Length: 251
Image (cartoon, rainbow, N blue to C red; front, side, top):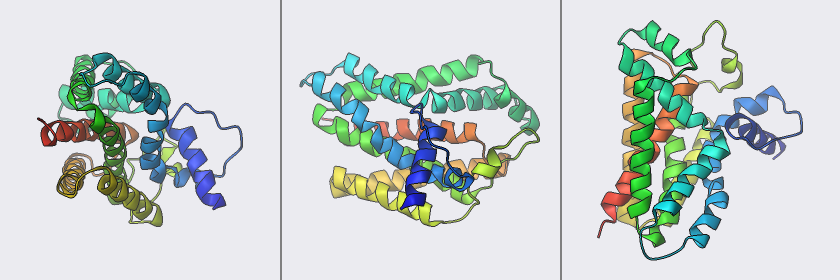
């Protein structure tokens, strides 16, 4: 239990802006990534007051905007930064090494801006249109499922090490570890509890398809993953699951 608690605190340090005042061992950080779906569920503690304060039967664009803003504040725009970096690199060139250089550049280009606008804009449109009684399930399933997609990549590919990178020492080795299976069980349970069985199965199949597509692309073009790729995968998978909700429960 102690190692589980320490790895959860390490996940807060690594993926959120929540301060943790106690020192943590390196082993805790190597297991921190498996808590990503749990952090996605934890976001609901911030979003639930917004759902309550802005409740109403009509579509509410302000509520949708706040529901998108809170995760950005929670993570410090960590995943949005990865999304912009990846699309800047992919849109600018087909050369592998040049793409990696662009992803390290702190400046944002036109492809990154467009990716952020389209991803956040479509997510806002979905959250504005999904019926109110489905918003909590939509948030929970999309925020946990999208992070599971990223975990599947971590379990199947190595981290792309660079000369100036120290992140590899704090990431797990590829493989189906206990942490991965625990996160998988959490996502399956959340999906089955939140949705009717047909839609739940479709959402799980969609998540599997998303990780397979991401894995195939990364294996072909890079043979590994980076933190930027994980952030981009999370945001694009989250949008895909929100679009699924919009499609599956449209009136």
